[in-house]
Image 1 (cartoon, helix red, strand yellow):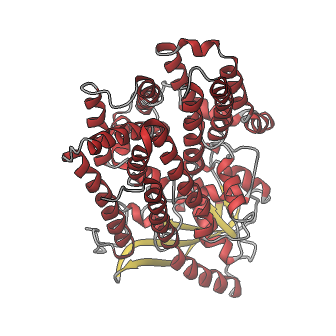
Image 2 (image 1 turned 180 degrees about the vertical axis):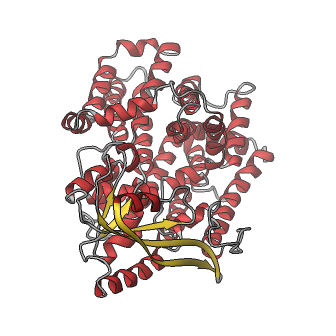
Image 3 (image 1 turned 45 degrees about the vertical axis):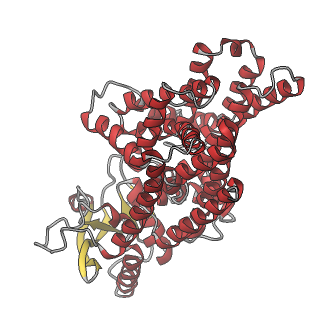
Length: 523
């Protein structure tokens, strides 16, 4: 029987994964968060109020500074980094327990919704973070677990690798600040399993180098009265009290995003290690140190702030290599049981969810609230897929309304779209404002409109006498019509637009004209 070539298998897996992700990137409209991070490239800064700048730089790099501005090109950075990440997973798994472990780890990685879709399709900070996190993990393993104790060349490679780990941890932190938890894992490992690490000067040099990468963040905050640092430090405060909702979300969201079957395989693998040590102690000690503390810390803080929920998946990633090593052991022993079958079910479940989810976005196949009950009914309220559907259609209709309004003198050509939330503002900016040659301005606290506080200032701010459009979605919780009636001379309903799937309304947009600002809001 011909021996399976795991390297070719991984390359084929990367090809199939890339094709799937390209199709998704071409199919899905931008969600609110994606549109918000598009503004990081549209208005590049050294840092931002709520996130570091790497995602904006990534978008600029892969779109030729937004010369190519379609959804696919915006997501190209994620697609390419996702494919590279899959190869790095194979390399790490191979280091842990041979090529077969690398292949099975890559298979588990590719069937994770978090690692393949969120980090490999959507243009979110998780895309560069996952790439640099995996590179950091690889160099940490190379730097901490020496291949040959008696070889001077091996010791030199370890020293260089440990320094390189600091470089990539720094780049991961420039992607998302939660990447600093990697250093927590290294500290835990050194404290409990390898205290000789504390004697290595390259470890401290590596940590110092990683902090140097945050210099752009320091400079931006210095120029902006440290408002970003104040905001981020507020997320870690426990003064707001325990939230059962976010605590439960921290338990089930990562469980679902990382594929429940994958989590089952990981838990079985961890339990089996107590019976048979299928990898060396140094590997499992390091991988668990980089995993368990991150998961526990993230869950604890998630009980007080939802901002830490996605950091839990960062701690799940190292466990994939343990599962890959365990599956390799089972296969080598020809023990083809529940777990090896579970790997097949994991891939099947992933593909099934992707296919059904995409079908639902365009057909509403699983939507149970098709019927339009009354004019004020919040149609689409419970359907999160509406976030990625109907914006191109809405853009066309809004363009017609605006063009007719300007021609009939109902609103000034200098009018803009007014928004009160940073995500809604970004989506309106990308789909409604830019194609129809207008702009979006934000009103509200910095916490509400975030980067749009700076964007609005660059666009000249909000001035007396200006007119604006306000677009109200039936999915929203709050209406700004009352705000318009208070601060503008008059409010007019320009039109009501229904977005339909299979000829059934799934969301309603009410377009208002806010005419002549008569007084500035306090904010």
